[in-house]
Length: 205
Ligand SMILES: O=C(O)CCC(=O)C(=O)O
Ligand SMILES: [Fe+2]
Image (cartoon, rainbow, N blue to C red; front, side, top):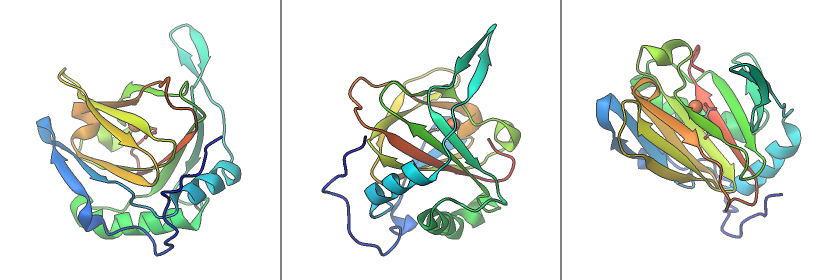
């Protein structure tokens, strides 16, 4: 179980302005925006999501076997109500800041629960739908125990690492889903759980 952090803000005034996000241009037309501590009271949000979201285990075919997906999932399609008002605020703030550049609003929210350091996601790009052929954005809010998000160019090259937790935001943009891959590797250090909320435009998965 995740231990609440004393550093957590008690300020309920909503997400910090996205104008303070820091953009890093990557090779091949990709970029990432990072804003640590974007959401105040992130530990409280973590606790609410942990109990209110209908977390599901999934199994997927891997070659000739069916294996457990090493994390729990819950997907909110565009017509579905998000599980917490703070996520509505977060989505509204993202739309405010990014719609001009993205050309459309964020529509869906995918939630992942990494129960402990043994849960993970393997190298991939979010390449279902438009992400395979066009520039797009995937905005990820992280709460709970920090975990590393790794990014590497699809064609090979050095891996970048971002530690994400406690209300941090990372936005992958430009060609990132088709020219780069990302992963959350297993961790022997992470003792608690992490929840990530991925906001995506329509058709991107
Ligand atoms: O948990 C994360 O931050 C990443 C999850 C992810 O890459 C995905 O669900 O496509
Ligand atoms: Fe992904």
